[in-house]
Amino acid sequence: MDYLTQHKQAFTEYLQIEKNASPYTVEYYNHDLEEFFAFVEREGFESLREIDQRAVRVFLTALYDRQLSRRSVSRKISSIRTFFKFLERENVIDSNAFMLISLPKAAKPIPGFLYEEEMEKLFEINDANDPLGQRNQALLEALYGTGIRVSECQSLRLKDIDFSVGTLLVRGKGKKERYVPFGSYAEKALQLYIHDGRKKLLEKSGSNSEVVFLNSRGNPITTRGIRLVLKNMMEKAALTINVHPHKLRHTFATHMLNEGADLRTVQELLGHESLSSTQIYTHVTKDHLRNIYLNSHPRAKK
Image (cartoon, rainbow, N blue to C red; front, side):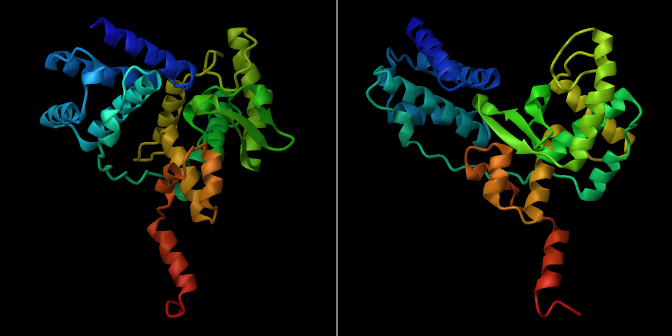
């Protein structure tokens, strides 16, 4: 239906311009809307004004009949609810029937993380005399030492690093900027790479790129390339676990909280909008719990 296509196009522009949504997010919204539009056409609705609570319940039933997970259903309903909220703002509809639907949230799995001993194995495998070894070490130190996302790491520019105060200027989701501190290990690795290995890599491409992390040909590395670098490190370190950029982010948050950092500080460092996103990291290791117990409880000490 033409009117559905028009509404979808207007909504897409709203996501891109007003919400600064990533192409990945826009793609998910559009996919969910296409499913809903197919339902609208199948049920013979002539206008979105006709969508009421009964229609929403029928749509929900259709989703559950496909044996989708509760999480998938919740995401789809959330997408369509946002779409209808936009239509209500634009006076296309009078009320948002999806606002009255309440779906229980699925329990969030505890994020995986690396123990300090496992991190040490990764830190020991890179050759500091090799340009790629220097780059890999700087990548590892930056991801673990700051907790930044792989996309944030991939887009870092030389001017974003302030060695005088030890901070990175990071551009996160929704183009929001934040400053993230880094420590002495990350500083040493970044300084060596930038003043030695990076220059040698840059000579291969002959470019004057300002991107910090380069691939073996001297061009800006991709997020996929960073994941591959970590995978190769894992294999060299003979680790049986899967190491990916987000696991290093989980590890950063877990180690910070385990060592006494408060939740609000970790939230700010990670660039989370809400505290609930950070609360998934409040788990602690069994060893850490045991150490606290043994050192704190009067009847635990020998």
